[in-house]
Image 1 (cartoon, rainbow, N blue to C red):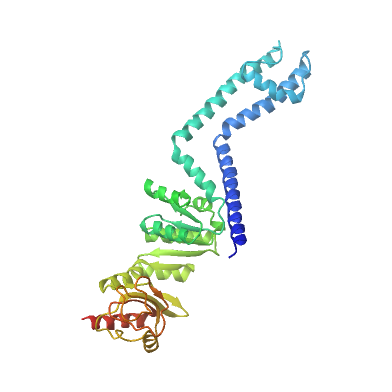
Image 2 (cartoon, rainbow, N blue to C red):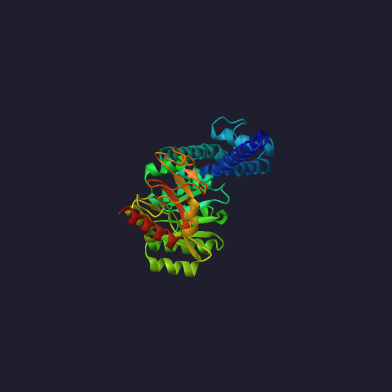
Length: 372
């Protein structure tokens, strides 16, 4: 990539960031106006409608000097602050305005001050309004419902991959909220079974939703609500009950990840000192990846990479030798990704294999027999 192209990309990202800040600011301003809508409405109605009424009464029914419509909002303001710019009238129906306007000013200032103090003291409410404003600018983002241990890890992985994420949860602790804030992930505080909450998360613009609360039936309800509001969105749901998971997959076109299915390979691998990935389903076949250490009397000890791959029908994607050895083709410090086929595998080497899941488990069993 040329330096010119890199500068263009950085400039484009900066422009997008500035545009987003502007959109967030406009949305937040609308939210603030909404918070102060009652005193603002009374204020503007008073100076404009009240000014028009005063003008009509003065010019139609009194002998006072005629007034101009353009001056009336200013006169109403001077009435409010007890500094009138015109002479006090004699007519009772006009004098009423001179006494009413200060009362309106007291209401507007008092109500506005009360709302300001409420927002200032209740900072969480103000912060929530800001996060709703941020979420309103997202497009093609991913919604994560349920910010527990699993949900937080999902958010972390997605943000590291460069995706924009909106989190939804009814109640999370302050520490978790701060961690979301550090990753620029807005939190919509509320029940995702509520349509309004999903609208605040901009479900209509999201490309995917991950439902991972600890309650299967809550996950089911949220999944149904999301599918009803956005039939095209990709949904991934976490389930503990395998039967319920199967039903959701069949009826709602949802990818369901069972907690037991996810945990089983990890527990089995850990028991024998290996790491096994979750199965990948490709064209009706199950594939896995495994990391393990070659045993002293393993069938792989002394065989070349090519020999192992051809005879076992696997792909060795990484080989690492901690203490070096006779084979100088293997790095003693860094893992060798896709090692040369003539490299000789030795006991103690760390191997990462990719193959059909049944082949993976068979190879792991034979390697363990060699160890024993």
